[in-house]
Length: 232
Image (cartoon, rainbow, N blue to C red):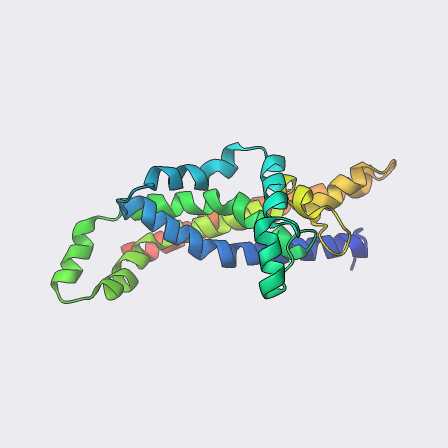
């Protein structure tokens, strides 16, 4: 059942989900590692790292997309290296859309994870260590379960952000139907066509519904994880 959506609309929807899933799968572990480094680490450059990971929150998305283009484009230093060594092309490909989504969603994934780590009482981990548990065992059996609500909320928020990402994506990989056109790109394309406001409105409604589901899902999953940890 099409529900009024064209095959191209469903293709854009599917690509949005695909990009969002990959962005969480790739960016989530990196965000968790950065959260541990910023919450627990004491090293030179910590302030700089904190600045860099939060830049996408305040920079215009188009600027982020342009920086990606000149760095990871086929003529950019990183993009040329990836293509020559690994055969991986990012610019104007769905893989580039994933990279843009990871960067734009990264701060939203990191912040709740970092807050959850900072909320853990170090004495709990010290007690586990005093009973003979090694660092990895303490992390796996004590720390990770305690910060699970933050991880869940960060992952869902990152997924929602990646699902609606537009500015950096269109600048880096354009808006090619069937290749790089996501839901946000499809809405933008419809708004450029006279008389296509109805089709754009349907996609807007779908995007809003997905965003609401993601926010509600983050709240529900976060509460469930918290209750499980507390033993309620």
